[in-house]
Length: 262
Image 1 (cartoon, rainbow, N blue to C red):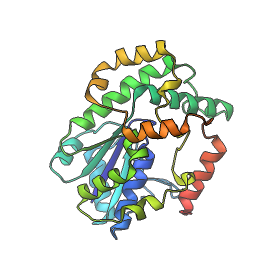
Image 2 (cartoon, rainbow, N blue to C red):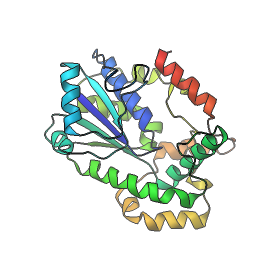
Image 3 (cartoon, one colour):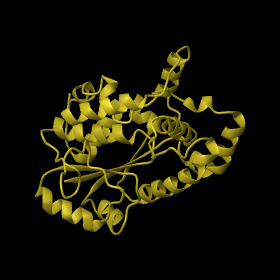
């Protein structure tokens, strides 16, 4: 079985990908880690910039009946959406309040410039994120339009993870020990791309910038309720805490732990 995890940047897409793989494992179905010719041998995830039906065909032949979870930030190319609608491929799509995505992109930009890395280094101000967000939200709409795609928002993935695990298991058609799956992630240091972990962090954004986002993405806000009861509870618990974004060294350590599965 092939399962595709699409996620807009900074929407807990890596965590959702990890949860999905762990659901398969908890059901007694080991997942394939693709090496060459698809990925580097030391790759910690089956990530592809773009996924089309031809790539899926190559992967299907390569895994020969095994289970595999793929991750992407790109749109469903070719006949991928049709394959998902037909049930031949399973898929999920993750989304987050665009205000919070922008703030997380700025965190990553600061980290990249400090370490002289290129990815995300162009994001210095909130305005710098808008064009990228427009493109990525277009990709999300394409995935969300496909029938049978399971849609999860960031606050569900992070603060109601048990419900998300149950939904993934139901989608796959398996039963799992939810606490056992979540137990693998009690240490946040094993969650890929974990940054600040602050609930409802859009409160950090100025009212003027928030107004820009609420107007620009009014259709999205009308279609999705991003705030959840659990997110509001966590935000209240965090109100007196000073929370800092994860640094580059912490990200490297996390990837090493993911590679070694420790």
